[in-house]
Amino acid sequence: MRTRTACVAIALLLLQSAAAERAFAQASEDPEGRLRALGLTLPSSNNAPAGNYVSAVRTGNLIYLATHGECGTPLRGKVGAGVSVDSAYASARRVGLCMLGTLKAELGDLRRVVRIVRVTGMVNSAPDFTDQPKVINGCSDLLVAVFGDKGRHARGVLGVASMADGRSVGIEMIVEVRD
Amino acid sequence: MRTRTACVAIALLLLQSAAAERAFAQASEDPEGRLRALGLTLPSSNNAPAGNYVSAVRTGNLIYLATHGECGTPLRGKVGAGVSVDSAYASARRVGLCMLGTLKAELGDLRRVVRIVRVTGMVNSAPDFTDQPKVINGCSDLLVAVFGDKGRHARGVLGVASMADGRSVGIEMIVEVRD
Amino acid sequence: MRTRTACVAIALLLLQSAAAERAFAQASEDPEGRLRALGLTLPSSNNAPAGNYVSAVRTGNLIYLATHGECGTPLRGKVGAGVSVDSAYASARRVGLCMLGTLKAELGDLRRVVRIVRVTGMVNSAPDFTDQPKVINGCSDLLVAVFGDKGRHARGVLGVASMADGRSVGIEMIVEVRD
Image 1 (cartoon, one colour):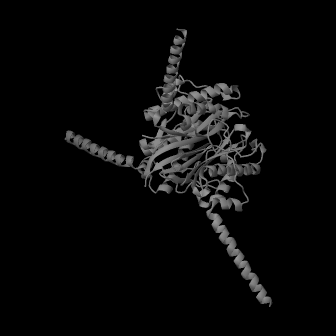
Image 2 (tube, rainbow over the protein chains, first blue to last red):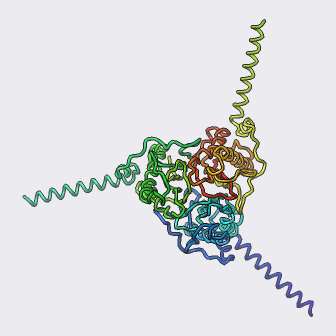
Image 3 (cartoon, rainbow over the protein chains, first blue to last red):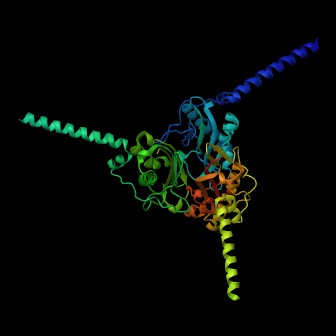
C-alpha cells in the first residue's frame, strides 16, 4: 500500500512538473509571459519626453527609442558618490522595464521584437567610478530574461558627469521588429 | 461711397490673406520655404571635420551625420558655469542649422527628408547642471519648425565633462531620406 | 659596358617597382592585405564583453559593434591629466584593431565591409581637455588606411568624466556589410 501511494505521488509530481515545463515553454516564447513570470508589470504610459521630441521612432524595421529614465520617480545622484552599484543596478532594471512599456505601446505585442540590437547606457558617475558595466547589467539582464537570445545586444556604457533631472541612469536602445 | 471703399478694402485684405495662406501652405510642405519664412539661411559649406572623417554617410535610406558644432565660431564654455541655458539653447539652434546645411549638401533638396529619426545632443556641463534637455530643445524646436511632424525625433541628451574645442554644444543625427 | 649594366639595373628596378605596385594594388583592394602591409595582426579573439551583452549584432546589412576597449591590457587614466594625446592616439588605434578582430570573426573576410558608417569615440578626459578629436584619429586613421574611401565614416567624439575599467579610450562603430 505504501508503494502504491508513493507511485501515485511520484506520478502526480511528474505530471505537475510537465505542466510547469509546458507553461514555461509557452511563456519563454512570449516576452510578455516571461514578464508575468518574473512578477513584472509593464508601465501603462510612456516616459513623458522632457523636451520637443518623441519616445520612439520607427524607420524600416528598426525602432529607435529615445533615452529613457525610470517611468516613475527616478533614482537620483552620482553612482560611486552616495549611490551604490546595487541601487543603480535596480534603477537600470526599472529603466529597462520603462523602455519595454514604450515598446509595447509602439508594437502592441512584444512578440514582434526580432532582436534587441543596441543598448546605450549612461551612468551619472563620480569621477573615479569605473563599474558602469555592472550598473547597466540591470537593464541587460532584464532584456535577456525577457527575450532570451533575441535580447542579447551590442552595448555601450558611458560614465557621464551630469544627467538631465539629476537621475543616476539613462538608457536608450535600437530594436529590430517585424509586423 | 464710403461703403464701397470699405468693401473694396475688405476684399483686398481677404485676397491678400488668402495669398499669404497659400504661400504658407506651400512653404509648410517645403522645409527650405519654412527656413526662409523663419528668416534663416542655410550655411553654404559643411562643418569642416576636425579629424579623419566625413560630415555625413548614407547607408540605405539613412544618413548618419557626424557630430556637428556650430558652422561659425561656436559658443564655448560649460553650461551652468558661466554659460546660460538661453545662450546654449541659441547655440543648439545654430548647430541644428549647421546640420541642415550638411543635409542640404548631401540631398540637394530638403524635401527628400522622410523623417528625423534620432538626435543625440551633448552639453558641456557643470557637474551640478541638470537642464540639458532645455538646451537641446534649441535644435529640436528648429527641426520641428522646419519639418513639422517629420521633424519629431527620438532623442538622447548627454551631459559631458569636456568637449572638443571647448564648445558648449555638439549634436549628431540620423535621418531617413528618399531619392 | 657600364651603360649596359646601368640599363639592366634600371630595367630590374622598373620591374621590381611594377611588381611592388601590383602587389600594392591587390593589397589595396583587400583590407586584410593592407593590414599585413602595415605590419598589423588581427587579434584572434573578441573583446570579452564586461557584462550581459555581445560584441556585435547584425541587423539587415548593418553590424553594430559594442563599445570596445583594447583587446589586451588597456591604457588607463585621464587624457590631459597624466595620459598624453600621443599615447591615447596609439590606444585608439589598438582599439580600432580590436574592433577589426571582432568584425573579422563576424564576417569571415573583411572584404565584406561595404562602408564604415559611423564611429563613436569616448575619451576619458580631464575637465579642461579639448583635443578629443586628435585622440580618436588613432582609430579613424587606421580605418582609412585599411579600407580606403570605404573607411571614411561619420564620427562623434565624447569627452567623458569616467570610463569602465578606468581605461582611457572606448570606441564603437556601425558597419555596412554584404554577404
